[in-house]
Image 1: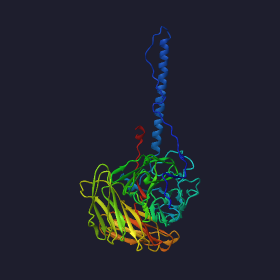
Image 2: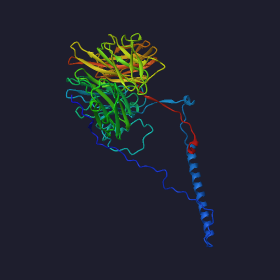
Image 3: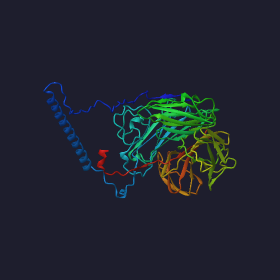
Image 4: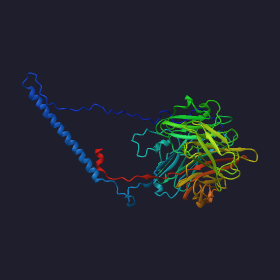
Length: 580
């Protein structure tokens, strides 16, 4: 695999899609005329009359202005009275917010840098049962490129959703998808798969779903590399563009080749800072600040080019000081394995990392603490019967603003598990970011690596796409509190099949691993959806394991709440708003 060059760019000229904004001066040229009541003596008999005439004229203008203002207010009040807001449903008369399905979902996939022997596939899926007419929506994945034209309209009421043109389409078909989209999603319940761009300059991709295809829209990107450098299976769930991303477990030591992928699918340029933290704190480097990512462009930034010397364990904070980007971190450890390091949940006093396989050969925990305070944390594992403390690895101390790491070895001892970090003293909680590298080895000594991270519960529903038939997909479910019941559904396949579901019982604090249920008559790959039926919060992860050329390749993705519905506040009529 070729090493990505520092700030390598693909597609999208700088400044494309930018717009100019005219400044408004509130202290502009408007002037107020005043009528003088003072009679000037200039020695002329006409002076007094002239002054009086001026006052009369000024009074008339003032009266006209007041009458005009009153007329405008009358019109505004009349319109507001004649067109009140829609009457809320009876259940909403109490003033509580109601739930509504999201109407647009967008995500960004990183550059599929796979070298000469690699291949990358992208799979998109929307769970069924969200309601609405599928014909009224569209879903697609397209290479990131600058929008064809700069937007001229004001932003919509939902600023978190980028404009559809941001996915880089010179034209769109009747369904709203770009004419050059890599894949289009026709209906909920059936996943679609397609190859990603395949070259050293391959761009990232933008994914958008609207209407009935928006709730729960999920896109998974999976890369297989068979050459020695970068050998392994790399997978991730494409995430929405944002302004801040945390990663723990990167490195610039030994044979590691780690890089940050930045993809801008927005209509305006983004300016990004990449902050690196090691065992001595923040690594200051001007080359890591002020990285401009043009609209529709992709850049890969090698960590050694913005670090100072070799650092064994790093936490990475990507911050967009202007604009928004999709950010992802890829780690490759020579012939020992490679994968995407998933972005962590926001810094929190307790972090839960699901997805440790029973045959874990080695595990290394990396934790970052904020500059404000040290962190003393308990290390616990969730086994089949609940939480317990691993012997010899009961705790970890992290100095303020620094990174600490500990080798856990074969910590699972032939049982599946989830890992939890929590304050040693409940009265001294410190928000942290955590990542865990896990290695699996075959009988021939060949191995692959994957990275886990702190994640949020699956909530009402969470989905992961690109599961393969024949048993390579394993689902890890951890109940972080009281006992819980979840429903696991396997979708139809990309080429056909009948969906199937099953319910799984989880003991309090326990972890259950099960081979992913497969649809009847499966043809192609399929999606897995997890829904919380009852009980406490549940975190989940999916492991995809495929042996290729005698290498036990695998990748692990956490399942996170798809936030397919939003709270809509109740509106009430208030004509007095025009006076505020």
